[in-house]
Structure formats: structure tokens, C-alpha cells
Image (cartoon, rainbow, N blue to C red; front, top):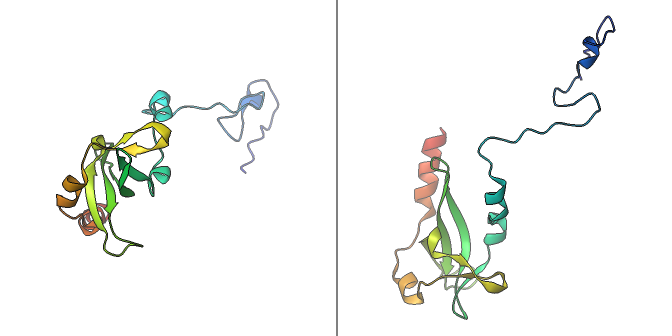
Length: 139
């Protein structure tokens, strides 16, 4: 820690602190980060809790959330990647589903109005497309 002890004690110099966020009483002053909406945060879902969750159409599980795609340039969630069929990762098909097609239902379940037929007829999703684009943008 940097020593910023004043050479001559006076009321003015005693207000200097090593951490500028600390007040004279020792209470830390917190400044919110611009753009954070606490009401929106309270209504948000954690991606770590979404991944692995099943998605239902009625009472039937039609897929499992494999991943979530985020567009940082537009501050938006692009899609949820669902894993359909298969067993232990063999024979599964990945499908990108727009985020507005997945809803939070009762009993902390995720639901969709999409049918198994719609999902199985959708083109397979390839993570290589996203990975390739992201690597270009970060180099």
C-alpha cells in the first residue's frame, strides 16, 4: 500500500486516504456502474443455471439447454442452443433457438411452444461458426 501520510498534520491533509473510496468514518462508498439496472438484474436468469436444464413442450421434455449465445456488440442474448435426442452426447443434434421462444414456466421449468417436429426439422447448429467469428473479433 502506498504511504500517503501527510507531513504536517492539519484538518485538510487528514482527509487523504489510500483508498479514495473510503470515507473518514471508514465506510466504503460504492458507485454503481453506469448501465446496470438492478430491477432488470432481479428479473434475469443466470446462464450457469440454464445450461443443463430441460425444455418442455407440455409435459414432454424436448431438449436440454447446451449453451447460450451472447452478442456483446448489441448487449443481447442471441440464442439458446438445445441438444435434441441422443444419449450421453452420441447421436444428439444441436439446434439454435431464438431466446424469445424459451419461457420460464411453473415449477422452475423452461417451456417452449416449438414442437419436436419443428426442432428436429431445424438445421443443425455448428459451434465452429461462432468460435471462428469470435476468434476473428478478438485478435
